[in-house]
Length: 323
Ligand SMILES: [Ca+2]
Ligand SMILES: [Ca+2]
Figure 1 (cartoon, rainbow, N blue to C red):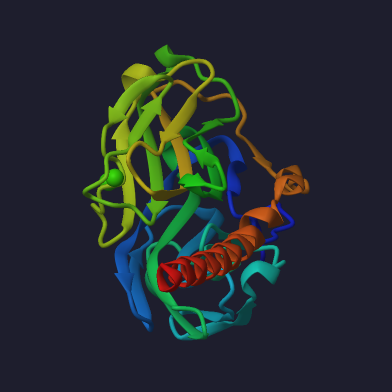
Figure 2 (cartoon, rainbow, N blue to C red):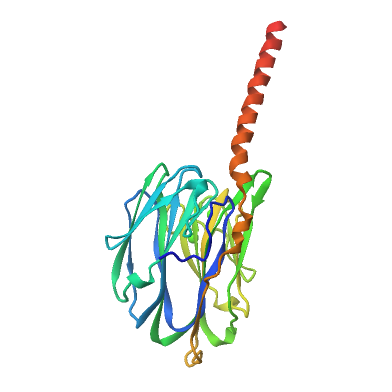
């Protein structure tokens, strides 16, 4: 059931977007979701297109913890069938499919390939509880499916990148993800980039680049609801042999890119060689970077500052009294 190839541990800077699956298939992608911060039970309806076979499907859920120390649980339902309740443990979280970052911004991912059917409308709903805030940013469903008469090349990347302003003398300003595989621009009729973000702000500019071309100077503009974005861009003209997307924080205090998906449709008659799919099953090495200092030092610094301020005021008062 659990898919993201990672040993997840709470990490202030989050988790780099990494590829989950890429390939070339006679088929298509379905990417949909919504709808901005709201309280549970949080429901989203999805209409899966028609085709011949579901290859891969995952659901991505953004949750607000309130802070990184709160704990609680999440329970996801597909048409009211539960996938089971799962604990969220704040800074102590080590679930493989829970990606906690910054001050309690979580991405939770489930591979639901074997539970979906083509040509059906489904409801995915989420319940949360415990001391976490528990509100949901959004739910995104990504489905790779086979169907005749269309051929695509695609790569799906997911993570929870915690771009942030100056904290402990460090900012985290930009993140670049390079898509797997090579593309010959002249083979493709269209190319689409999907991105999704948590904790976005309409009033704070951020920047999105594809192969160094500026696509948007406020991609995280809450266009899919409060603090949530699921956007698509036509990148046909920018498609190159190697392709990368860059997320720049800009003026956002915090912004969390969670998905980067590239899909390109072959021109009629092209891409008729054998299909292939690669699944990422390797353990994720990015976790060696997790940094407890970020989480623990602010409390120590705050207490020290308060003690100093208290002592300073006492001294000042004593001096004033003497004067
Ligand atoms: Ca947007
Ligand atoms: Ca923004």
